[in-house]
Image (cartoon, rainbow, N blue to C red):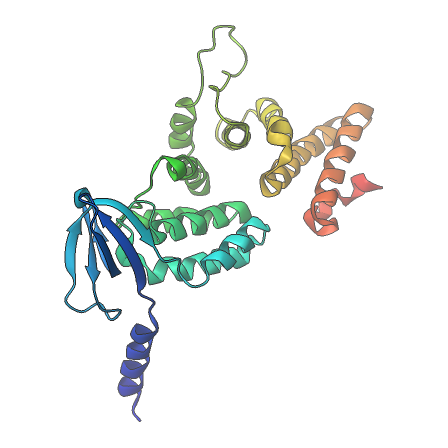
Length: 292
């Protein structure tokens, strides 16, 4: 068999393996419909009575009272993997699902959009911010459709994407949207009242902005420590990144003032946080000296 024929057969096999999700729909008049989801656009879905997707037709979302979509194969496993902190594995699992259901991305909170969102979140949790920026830029051609429950996570990812690009000016503008009035003229404006997990992320992003963009390490280390303690450190990936960054700046201070016992104790505490999160592998080798 020649190579072009083999490629054709492999492509055809891939199409045959593609999963078609069943849907249960209730119209505004209460009429039930069982069908298969083929595609979506901004104001409707395309359904078919055949799992192969033949003779599909568009059903406007305005005509739908309720819709239940079959869970894709591998979705529960991907969510469990993500919840267990195995972000590298979760990234690949969600990417596969997102690629398979790219045609239903315009469906609000559909599996096409949610899978891509969780792929982005997995990249962020691994600290793969260059890859996150590239993936989010690529997605601009087919924007995710997310409701209020998930939109906040996506908005937060914008800041991480800007950090991945090292676009300090845009990151500064992004952060300003979350800062409150600084009536007391504090060194840094307080953030608005948001959930603690979001506040921890904003503190880390502003610390990076201050350290790398504004060259203000003393302000940065304050926010790194806030990111460490806010939300009780529930996001272990963020906790480790903040601990390593704070340790790096503390190490620089120790080099300038080697006899400072207070700084030495801070460095040891930060090194222990990293170690306790994931053993010595979670602590950069240059800082293992602080565990002695």
